[in-house]
Image (cartoon, rainbow, N blue to C red):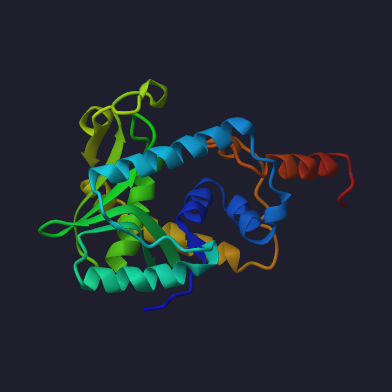
Length: 236
């Protein structure tokens, strides 16, 4: 099993939004805009929800790496645990075709069931694309999934109180059919991202709707400056 990878799940989603963004993220990460406080809060809430959802499948083995650069070791440990049919694995890591994904919860119950946890009530297209990529990597790694579901909230995070029964907080939505239907497009997008990352220079992609859809890109500040400099004749 190859333990090296070029593309993470977050990089893939970034690249689907804008190939220029994923190139900058890979090679010029220092140019990113400061993370807004509101987004920091959303990340923290998402982290809390993810850990709360683990209570649905308790006593799992957490294979999270000690450092982001050690996902190869996590993938190796995941492979060992799945071969042993370990019942519950948190942050199960897989690497396939130079892409790495870490699944929130992997459960063995008469077959393998994958679960991604989202801290929202609705399932967006981006969430489905996220799941489809994970299905691509996990299946490509050789693990057969019986189902892939998104665990999401029944009510807004701010309405959640300590002690609420888990059944009242979370709902499960299978997205397996959606994942399978997107596999060809997933593979095409991965090859596009790999091609862009092999380029010797920043791809000349103009600013547009993709800068804010589905998320606000964190290179908007840099791209705006480059665009303004060009208009002012600083690039000739």
